[in-house]
Image 1 (cartoon, one colour):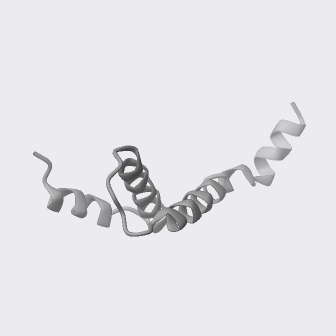
Image 2 (image 1 turned 180 degrees about the horizontal axis):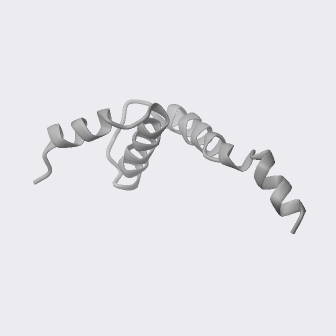
Image 3 (image 1 turned 90 degrees about the horizontal axis):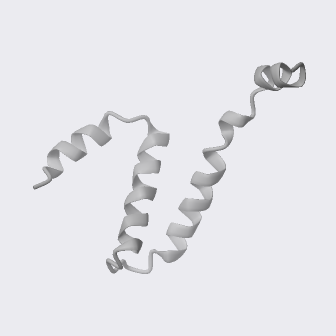
Length: 71
């Protein structure tokens, strides 16, 4: 059995952006297993779009660009 208090403790230790990723993953699992939600589809789509945009931030790295341009 999963200890929800343990899950909550571990989530609280995460940085804010990682907490959002956990929330997005939970919502994905809720959809996968068809667990009903209260009109969350619009919020889920917005959250997934936001997570997709924020997860590419690491690509904006001028130092890495310079290294790859010189290869």
